[in-house]
Length: 296
Image (cartoon, rainbow, N blue to C red):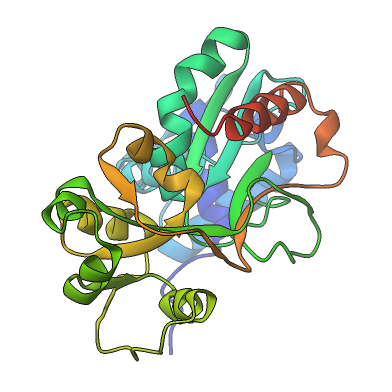
């Protein structure tokens, strides 16, 4: 099969040289010699069978084929730059702190308290990235992450941020419709299940109730989706205290029974030694104080 693409390095060299119209400046940008630039351009010219640059005493200029190739490549390189722009690493002396967290924690706890952080630390800029996957902090230019799990992640320092308790909650309208009677609520309302290991089995075990099986469960597998379902009166759910704290204080949700102990919770995770980074210690201290304030 014939080769359909020239070497990517040659394409990259051409893009830089065509942008600068100078082999010298292209060599400076790429950190190579001018001879290396010339060789890569020659490789590309041989591949397409046409001359791309006119060599002149004052420098270089693009031939017709060179101008056409530059125009064709420009959109592709702009897409590549845009794709990698968010991953640009910043200096460790920067006042920007990059935090990765699950969407539920960001939406239900962190964002409502951002004004407090900004007022307390006006010189620190916080970037929040939301992701449910386990990020590699060493490769993805993230200073700190808030993860939900058992806290057993290798290569990072993890500190439990909250107790592993799940609160049984329902919408206030549902609670009042059943006169606040727990037995009526449990008998009438659908159970929303988030975890693969059904958390309602743990609730039944803790309260001495017989197992109901999974037939009553409405499986959603995401805290935010489960909360929205609860808000809409579509059932009862067992959710982390820190996620439902504000709706409980605002009386939009009602806790209907005692907390259920769970083997997962929210953790702060960072690379070893990262706690010496400017701004990170301040954020961690502020966040722990906010988490400890369990009621308004």
